[in-house]
Length: 329
Length: 257
Image (tube, rainbow over the protein chains, first blue to last red):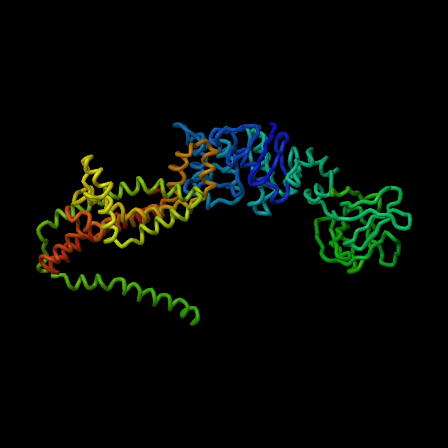
C-alpha cells in the first residue's frame, strides 16, 4: 500500500513510501513519526493518500498507539467488541481473542494484563474493525525486555497471518531488524528504503548507520598531510592512513565494524595502531564486545569471550574495513 | 518504630479533631431537638415537596445545559478562555442575596428580560419557574467547574481511539468520555444537588413563594420559634442526603452508572 502524506503543522513533514507486510519506519525521537501515524488515522490535520479527507471513524485503519490505549472501564472482550456491532459482538470478539491467543484473559481488565498481553488485546480490537492498514506506534516501548523478542515474533506472526499490511514506527533498531521492509527517516525526510538485510549492509550515510544502532559510527575528516591522505578522528585523537582511497578533503561520518578491529600487544608501534583503555565489557555469549576509551571517544571491539584483555591495549583499525560518507553541509 | 508511630499519630489526631469540629453543630442539633414534642408546623409538608420537586427539575436543567459546556471547556482550547473562567468565578463569588437581586433586575417584572418573558406568559417572580431559576443560577457554576475537571481527567487518546474504531464523536462521548468521567460527574451532580436544595438567599429574593425548606425554616423561626425549625431540618437532611450519598458510593464501583 502506497503512503503519501504531507503534514504542515505542528511540524512540516512529507513522507512517501510503500508499506508491504510488516514495515518499520525507523527514526529518532522528534522526527514526527507518531504524528505521521496520527495523520494517517485522521487524528491530526494533513493531506495525503490513502484515506485523505475522510473523518477518522470512516478510515479503515487499525491504530495501536504507544501504550495501546485499551479502555480501562472495559474488560478484554468488551474492548475488542467495542469495534463491533450487532448481536454476535461477543462471539466475534472471543474469536478474535482466540486468534491472538488471549481467549483465557477475556474477562480480565487491562490494568491486570502485562504489556505484551495488552498489545495483543489492542491488536485484536484493531483487527475487529477490519482495517486495510495497521498502524503501530512504538510497539516495543512498553514491553518487558526479557520477553520482548518473543512478543515481537508473535506480533509479526499474527500480522502475517491476518495478511494486513502493517506500518510500525519506532526508534528501536532491534524491531527494524525483523521487519519485512525498512524505511529510514532522518531530518524529517525518508533517507533509505529496502529490506533490513540490504539496509544494514549498506546504510546510505552516517545518520542511517546511527539509526540502525551500528557501533563505531563517528565524525571525522579526510585531509592530506605531507602529501598523504589520512582519515582524522579528532575525538579519538587518531589518524588512519588511507592512501589511494581518497582524493579530496571533506568532513565525513566514518564507521568500522567491531569485528574488524584487531587487538594487539601494546608493544607494537605503527601509525594505524591506537592505544586504548578498557571502559566496559559487554558479554554477548561466545563473543564479547569491549568498550574502549580512545582519547575522548569510544571504540567497540569484538573478541572471543575466552580471550584475556588487559586494561590497556593497542588496537589496529584495518583501513579496508573502514567506510565513510561525506557529511552534508 | 516510635518515629513511625508519631508520624502516623499526628495526622490521625488532627483528622479526629477536624471531624469533631465538623460534627459539633449536629451534636448541637441532636441535643437541642425536643424529641418529646417533635412535630411539624403547618406547610412543612408542602415545603418538602416544593424543595424536592423543583430542585430535581433544576438539577435536570443544570445537567442538560452544564454538561455540554463542561465538555466543551475541557476539550477545546478557545482563545480568551480566561474570560470564561472569570465568568464562572464571578457566578461562584456573587453572594446569594446579591445574585437574587441581580436576577430580579434582569428577570423581574421591570427587568428587560422579565417584561418580555411575562408577555410570553412566563412569570419569573414568586413562581415555580422563578424558584427553579434561582436554584439553577446558584448551582450551575459549581456543576460546570466540577464536571469540566472530570472530563479533563479523561485521556483524550481514548476518545480518539474510539473514533478510529469506527465510532462517531457522539458515540465516543457516550461510551468512553461519560463512563470514564463518571466518578467526577457524580460528584458534580451531588454538589449541584446540595447547592440547589440548600439555596436560601437568591430564592428568598426571587421566589418567596412557593416556599421550599430553606425559606420555610426561616419563616418557622420568625413566626413560631426555634422549636419549629429543628423537626423540618431533620427532614431536610433525611431527604437531601440519599442522592449524593448513593451517587458517591455507586460511582466508585465499576459500571454501576
